[in-house]
Image (cartoon, rainbow, N blue to C red; front, side):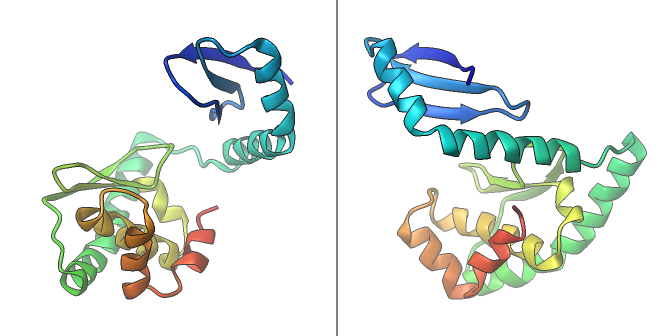
Length: 169
């Protein structure tokens, strides 16, 4: 299994599989090659699955023309606007702005200034999944991390969020 080692001032080892299927191992500056190899070997199954998932994503990705992207963005905006209004009121949060992007690696994001973005690619997923992403990003207005309180907050307004989250995979 081929991989690139990236050394930096860090204390732990991390594995990353990029969209093109390449593997990067982020390691502490002084970690021995043998230790890195042992770490990679112990995570071989996970790496194989991650590489396979990235390959499936690439194969399933829908190619769109600029005009189709524009239409998908309009369609998503129309779909999520009532969801945002509904859940903002229920959850007691209000985004500063909402944008639709062409992000490939994430479905949504929430900035430190409470600006929420959604990838137009969400139009390819079931309504329940889209609604989960809306609630997830709105929850970041109150909780800026993915801790226990964050997920408890989501569960309060969407008890079946785990099933909905699976629809995105």
